Image 1 (cartoon, rainbow, N blue to C red):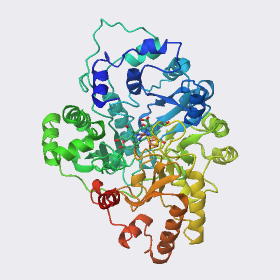
Image 2: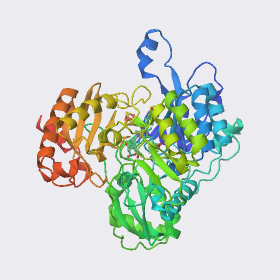
Image 3: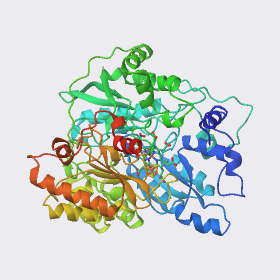
Image 4: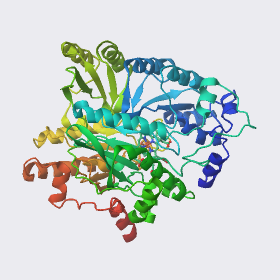
Length: 565
Ligand code: SRM
Ligand code: SF4
């Protein structure tokens, strides 16, 4: 579909309603009208088809096996045990039996039939959950650091994440009307005013997060808009503001590139919503609308420059940015093991490989959450924290998780820090496997790490099935991006704390080539690293990989090669 058609569909959608009511009631197809597939994203839904069955269905002259993916909006990833129980039940009754934890602290259901969508959404609504703006050209799920060892600062940051998420929701009532109340749209009734978004919403998706240093689990530099908490004596005094991050790009299109956000200044908590709203409206008014590949906010910043942006922001928000406060991050992963909370209860991060919870995992987790936890937190690294566990229940929780095949015991440091995006068979954009292949590749990588005596090193490995980068591979010390079945670009040299992007090192490589290269680099790392030096930093210091100063350099090797040929 042409990019301008998407703009037209949004504009003429009568507040995101389109012809969804008719599409849902059309018994002749398992799918919905193409124009409605654009609008369902704003309601947290993607139409997909099972790619494993595509060929078979085509040969049988059947329409693709249409099914839907629904993403639940969960600001900061915090939910109650009751909400978890509701989602757990829905995985069996209307989805494919799995729950997928995402890289943005949300939950996805896959394989939902059109006729089950209303049931799914109504049950979520009963549990006080929704999927509004979980996808689409609006602000998405707002992320927030999960660990409460940050104490009161974490609690305040989470409260701001929730407020921010609410503040930037579209005002349209279409989600409730269509999915919960099942009302037919009255075409004569004018749609709701959208004071923040306007009738065309944003040119492209928009992402925001709140980080609490020293942990950068939310990968703050990858966000369109970031608020980095600044604390004094356990008190939140304000936020450093970061703008213009984003990771998606396309193979062979150098005008698209991953970009790290810039930290532009410090604000007081009372100004957070005004600043966020101003950033969003600047993107609404100045973002590119003719070419969706250049429509993310990072390109608006690139085109207009930071000085212009800062002036525009201060004017719109009526806020003077103070100089940014000093900040320091240690890592962009999750922290494992039991941690004591300030209230004397305990929390444990549960390692969920690539965020995919299968039926066997779910039953053990169900028991842990319903009987022993007072809250649940989904992490930005596709894991899950069971929190509020009484001290005397810890052994039982460990046993239950182990017998459910969950948990990090017996897994290597590399695996615990790895992530893969969904890719095949549900993602329509996948060029190669990710979630279904990374576990096997990691087994080979673990063997290499053991051979060189570095198996205890938490080197970050992330794999995406295409350059969109849903697992944030350009911020991993070893990143893989799918090019074709069985072939990947390999990126190296990102910083362990998420503050430096990686650089293309191998282009279109197969497994043998990848492992051969990692073997050589692990050997050098084991022999020549300095005390405590991280793998990505070592590659840069030792000159194996040139540090990336600007995102346009990430794929520079590819550009050079194409120019030379
Ligand atoms: Fe993503 C599109 C899955 C986080 C960049 N992403 C998609 C779609 C919806 C495919 C599509 O458009 O048809 C994928 C659905 C697959 C499926 O079957 O479930 C998809 N993205 C995911 C998730 C589930 C990956 C995961 O394994 O966890 C993550 C859901 C997050 C959430 O809960 O909201 C997910 N996607 C990300 C991230 C990471 C992040 O946000 O922290 C990125 C990189 C950061 C960024 O946005 O720059 C990301 N996804 C994209 C892009 C590239 C956007 C761009 O700027 O070019 C696309 C394609 C697009 O938008 O056209 C995309
Ligand atoms: Fe799909 Fe590509 Fe995102 Fe993976 S990175 S989920 S393949 S869009």
